[in-house]
Image 1 (cartoon, rainbow, N blue to C red):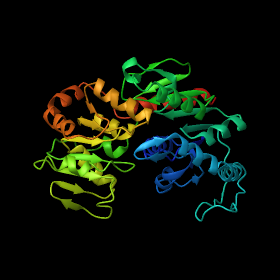
Image 2 (image 1 turned 135 degrees about the vertical axis):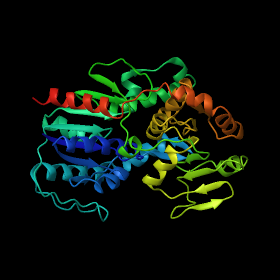
Image 3 (image 1 turned 30 degrees about the horizontal axis):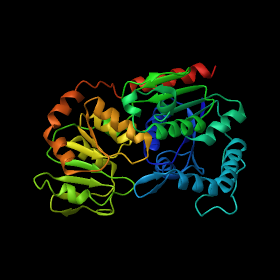
Image 4 (image 1 turned 90 degrees about the horizontal axis):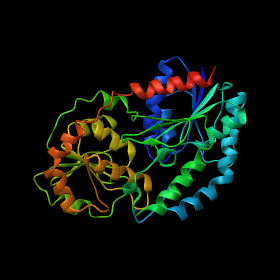
Amino acid sequence: MRILYGVAGEGLGHAIRSQAVLEHLVACGHDVAVMASGRAYEVLAKRFANVHRIQGLFLAYDQERMSVGRTLLGTALQLVPGLRHNLSVSMGLATGTGGSVRGMAPGRDIVQRLPFAPDIVLTDFETWSLLYAHVSGVPVVSIDNLQVIHRCKQPKDIVKGQRKAFELARTVVRAKLPGADHYVITSFFPAKVRKKHTTVVPPVLRASVLQARCTRGEHVLVYRSGGDDGRLEEVLRAFPDTEFRIYGTPHGRDRDVRQDNLLYRPVSEEQFVADLASSRAVIAGGGFTLMSEAIYLGKPMLSVPIPGHFEQNMNARWLERLGYGLQTEKLRKRDVRTLLEQGDEFAHALRDHRQCGNADAFEVISDVIERLVR
């Protein structure tokens, strides 16, 4: 079966999940082509042969808060050249002609070598591939975690105090991928479906996490994305007897850098997963992927979601609601102290979490594909 897979490039979560699904599809013998933007293209192009760069949406931040205005402005400025480039990629993919696109930055020119007419389109929060499916008249399946905002019910305590952010997020998610034939939603919390043609499955995890040897060390893994509020070092140095292994900051970009009880480490999947699997606890934002990995490995977590980012705040509230950790608007000493002192309680709750690797998710995805392509 020929499958076109679209992957959104904002953050790494979409790429990490899609990589696992793509590996499964290829192992099943499917012929797969990928359209990806941003960081997702950089990750997937290193691992798969038929990957094509497209222009995608990006999120803008102002003082650690997601800026709706700057995001919309940036999207509008990129709209015309982005559509032109994506259309060129799509036409080349379908006809095998391809060629360069004038006016695009170096490295963005695509040469399509072989015609590719997909039997079905899969999309991880990527709109252009969905439009491609609608125009081509082939079925399309959405596979992501964000559709939980629109297609599932949210308890009042999860939405409390952020109703406007919730309604805005739901509007954006609904508009991003309208009219898919089926929606497969990955979720670590029990989500109640409110829309037809929707299935909730456990998170899809990368192979390195599934294969990791899980132990309980003394260090705490810290991951910061999108910068920090400047209080990170001050707060963590208040616990000199605990080592914090920190990823995602300018320090330690190329090599390990130690400053007292803080160990800054460069980005490395192998080292990161090893530190995660052997950690005592995790401090990070509210991103779905790392939170799902920490939960799977039984690691208590302190979540500091990006202000104004409903999905991250939703994840953080569910984390606390399930007893897997706690959440806070700003990183404070008392929150870190609670994480360290109540780690055993959180770990006990995490033992009740059950997930059989990716088996359940892959079974649903395969069933949906087979049902839609007959």
